[in-house]
Image (cartoon, rainbow, N blue to C red; front, side, top):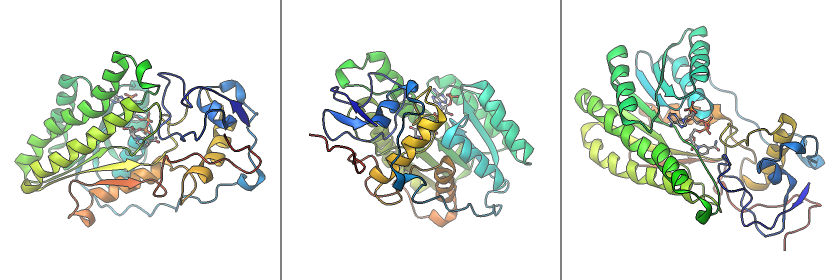
Length: 332
Ligand SMILES: NC(=O)c1ccc[n+]([C@@H]2O[C@H](COP(=O)([O-])OP(=O)(O)OC[C@H]3O[C@@H](n4cnc5c(N)ncnc54)[C@H](OP(=O)(O)O)[C@@H]3O)[C@@H](O)[C@H]2O)c1
């Protein structure tokens, strides 16, 4: 359960994603689970979860039955080949929307589209990389041509890379900014003209309130999205287009789960991590819960909301200080 680690962050430089991973309060002691989060796949079976954490303290409320709230509406989503975007694509489709989504992994995109069609949904998947302006513009324009308009855009594609700032390469920095911040800028740039012509629209972007050591590139990109959303809300609000952002708390997706971690280790990590770090609901979000919030924000129930970044984080301190379970020495 305990791992010794003198490095200044719980992650190795430029490792894959640990969105909102717990802050470490001291230099020496971290949960063995955090070592798992650093990619120690070999820890399978080594996770000791205190008895009081054998089941999640809270569980997601069951989803309400779809109510056809988006019947006939056109919804575009960037980054829906997995995780939150995938869940949102399915949720919008279940509500009757025609869903057009992109992502780079063709196999994943085709699987998501197949699963939506199998439930009677209307969907198209296009391989497009949000870092490539031409691909993104073609994806947006073709969506409008194919489905006859654009009512809602969920600009969700994102990546994270962590490491002490001085160890981040320029390429890594650029990749994170180009995917997350510039990707959102370009998406709105290409979506807005269609919505302006129609005189209405809803744009929701995926930001984050993640603030932690090693997060310079990711945090900067996500704070930039909040800035873009502020300005875009004022640019387009007068024309009937609402622009907002959602800031999910740590969510059980590939972005949060280090590659190669066995299921048992990941389940143990989640059980120990939630109560210690998610101040109110004491567990990670499911992608479906975040998707439900996105769908709700897109309804007219939120018709007066513009320029907001909504934290859906299970509590007010998502990504805050790391607390240790009973029996684990206090760091010092
Ligand atoms: N999970 C969390 O704890 C958490 C918390 C706060 C915010 N977020 C944000 O939520 C969003 C979704 O992440 P997730 O957690 O659902 O992780 P995920 O499963 O890794 O999803 C990321 C999505 O973005 C797509 N994407 C990445 N780079 C892209 C590119 N260059 N062009 C097109 N699509 C791209 C990925 O598709 P391809 O790889 O197929 O391109 C994938 O569909 C991200 O913006 C992330 O920063 C996540």
